[in-house]
Length: 229
Image 1: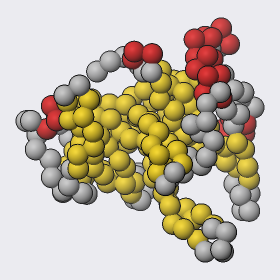
Image 2: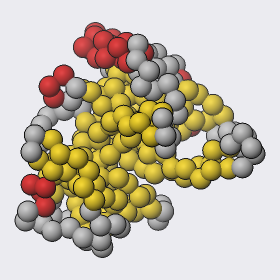
Image 3: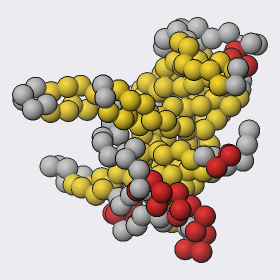
């Protein structure tokens, strides 16, 4: 697996049959949903992408247990005439599932903030900050990963600026919410994001290489809409 600032480890159960996703340079990729337990007892239902190469020796069907290591990837897709940012766990290798694995959902990212943090307080007084992180990938590409922080970490994140380089640890999660429509009805939707447990800013002299990515993103219209799909 290539050395980057983007690592994900997931262990869970496949909860739908594989579907063809896309083909790249003659290699086919498939998508499905992985049900991953949280330490709290709740569950996340997460989109994952696998190459046909990984499936040759490990047939995967609905109900299969799966443990993967890879990266969080993002891509932009036009849905109903507007661009949507879609997030997936991209499997780079499948590993033996260890029954003693205490944490089945681990994410580590290093990247630069693409936009100012969005800090808010809920009606119950809970502090939240949303971040959009640009993470380098091979061949000059980048992935743009939405992250959410809570409490003291949210207060810390609120003081960060566009272009700041950070490291974080957390989990890839699915979060159900309702979108209010103009006619007063509510639409049930799901957000995919990294829930951050630890966050730290890197030294200013290390941020130069990623600052250009964040600046370039501000000059595009890819993320002008909601990132929650």
